[in-house]
Amino acid sequence: MKKYLSIYTLLALTCIALQSCLFSEEEIFDESSANRATADVIKCQEILKDVPNGWKLEYYIGSNYAAGAVTLLMKFDGKQVEMASETGAEGYKPGTIITSLYQVKSEQSTMLTFDSYNQLIHMFSGPLGLNMNVGGDYEFIIMSATPDKVILQGKKYKNIMEMTPMPKDIPWRIQLEDIIDIEKDAFLNTYRMEKGGQILNYFIRDNGTMSTFSVYSTDYSIAGSLPYIYTEKGLKLQSPFNANGVKIQHFKWDKKSRLFVCTDADATDIVLKEYYPENYLQYEDYIGTYTATVDDYDEGPITQSVTITPKVRGESYTLKSIGGFNFTLLYDKANGKLTLDSQSISPASSSSYYFACAAGVEGYAHTELSLPSRLRSGLVNVTVKTNPFTFYFADKASQENTSLIIWAYSSDEYSTSGLMGYWSWYNSILMVKENEGN
Image (cartoon, rainbow, N blue to C red):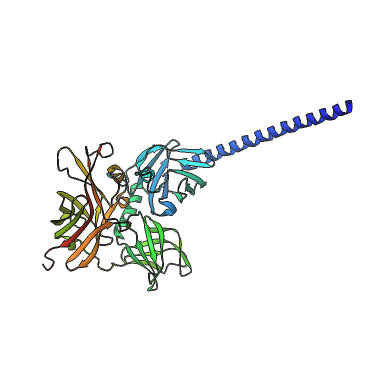
C-alpha cells in the first residue's frame, strides 16, 4: 500500500510541478510579447516624430485603389498631427494646416490611428448615407517603419500606402503648389502612350475619381483601371505598368512638349502624350439659348427656353433657368464638357433653402459638400448630335443616371438644418441649341 501511495504522491507532485512550469512559461511569453509590442509602438512613435519637416503620404482611396490618390502632408508631435493637402472639402484652401489628434497603439499589430476629426482624411472615411463612404481609411497598420520610409496598410480597405520624409528645405506650401500646377497645366484627360512615335496604349483619365486612368490597347479591345497620384514633378502610377515588357511607374511633366516623360531605367523613351479627343468643344461653344426639355417626376415632360451665359470666363457659366432656379455649370477643360455638380442654389422664398443633388443622390447636402469636387456626384453633358447642337446630362462617373433632385432645407446650414423634402425631381434634361446657324 505504501508503495502505491508513494507512486500516487510522486505522480501528483510531478503534475503540480509541470503545471507550475506551464504557468511560468506562459507568463514569460505574455510578458515578452507585451514588451515587444510596447517597444514597437515606442519605436514607430519616435520615427514619426523625428522628421524635421514632416511626412508626405500618398493616400489612396477606394477599394483596390479605385478612386486614385491625394497627397497628405503630416507632422507628428506625439499627440497631435498637423495636416495639409492640395485639395479638400467645400471652402478648404489648399495648403491650409488642420490640427487633430492621433495615436500609435498596439492591437493585433502596431497601428497609426487618427482618432479625432480632421476633414482632410475623415472626409474620405465618413458616412455618406446608406452606410456608404468613398472608401478611405483613418486607421492604418504600420507594416514597416524606418527613418526613410513608412509603409501603411488601411485597416478596412487594405490599400498599401507609402509615407516618405519631406525634404528639410521645401516649405509645404511650395510642395503643394507644385503638385497643383502640374495638374492644372496637364489639364487634358486623354493621352497616348508612345515609344519612338509608336502608339502602345491609350490612357484616359476617369471622371468621378481623384486620379485613375482607364488603359486601352490600340484597338480599344482591352481596358483596365490604373490608379496614380500627381507629384511635384509629374505623376506616379500606384504600381508598375508593363509597357511592351518594360516596367514603368514614374513620369516627369514636360511643359514645353506637353507630355509626361517616363524616368524609370530602360524606359526613358516612353511618354504619355496628350491629345484632344474627338468632338472636343471649347468654352465659347456652349454659350447661347437652348430649348430645354425637362422630364419632371410629378408633371412629366416640360419644355422651356433657357440660356447658358458666361460666369467666370473659361471656367463656368450660369444656366438660367430651369424650374425657376439658376444653376452654375462648370467648363471641364480636361474633356471639353459641361459639368453640373451638386450645389446650393439661391432660395426662391425667404423660408426655404435649396440644394441640387446631381445623379439622384440622397437628400443630404452636407455629405456632398464634405467631399472634394472631383468626388461629388455630378452630371456631364453627352452630345446627341451636332446640328442642331443637342445634348443631355448624365452621371459623370457612369454616364447612366440622369436625374437631378432639388431638396428643400430650413436653412443654408445644410449639415444641421432640417430636410423638408424634395422640391423638384427631374429624371432627365435634354438641351437643343437655338439659332445654330448664327
